[in-house]
Image 1 (cartoon, one colour):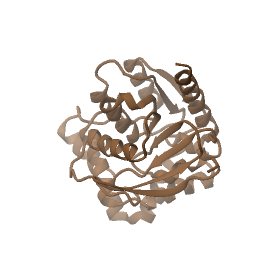
Image 2 (image 1 turned 135 degrees about the horizontal axis):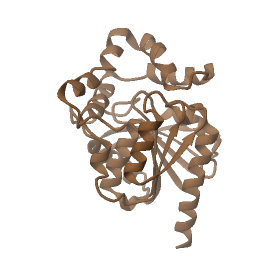
Image 3 (image 1 turned 120 degrees about the horizontal axis):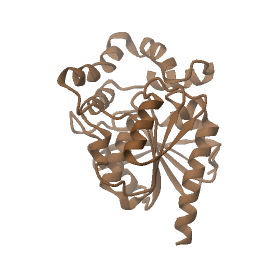
Image 4 (image 1 turned 120 degrees about the vertical axis):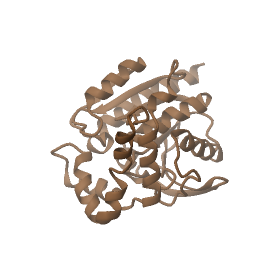
Length: 276
């Protein structure tokens, strides 16, 4: 298998049907997408990281992946499905990359199974609203999925996609984001909205982070602004890396720079692991 394309695959787990995409060969890098996306959004990285085995899941309730049984899930519930999926794939060690809402899932998994992780990258991380007041949490929960229902996937995607990228994003990149939004399933999207509104990233990293970790953010991110992400990195004691000329979906806006950041981080860690 080459690193030129990501191949769609599925697995049947005890907890549900799980869809994902795979490319390349070598050390394993696992990719967790954000709230308005899916596994196919990582396609731009496939040709840029041929020396790695890339595994990108469709989160529970996304694509063909079965939603979680929990009606009001936490990041820990997504982490449990992630663990079952990696078990089924017999992944012993990997670098885990969580983008946006996926960063919350990555932190929950880091708390659950640090022994499986070589390192973690939190990219344009959503931080969650668990500590906000009731009105704010309710507003966050109802800020996206009801619009998808009311407007329909076409209109919702048309309005939402440009906000996830830099102002001067290419039409091809906007189309990629727009196509991902069109494929959202209301039930899975609503579950993810619940998690965003009622959980918090830092609830899973209250103590010392158990594995090497780094924070990335697009320098034109309007969803998780760089100043907020930098403040998070400072609180967590992690290195912050800016992705130039990139909005919230930084790996789509600037795939070469994003891939270089992955290779710099993961390459060092996997080399160090081989030397031990």
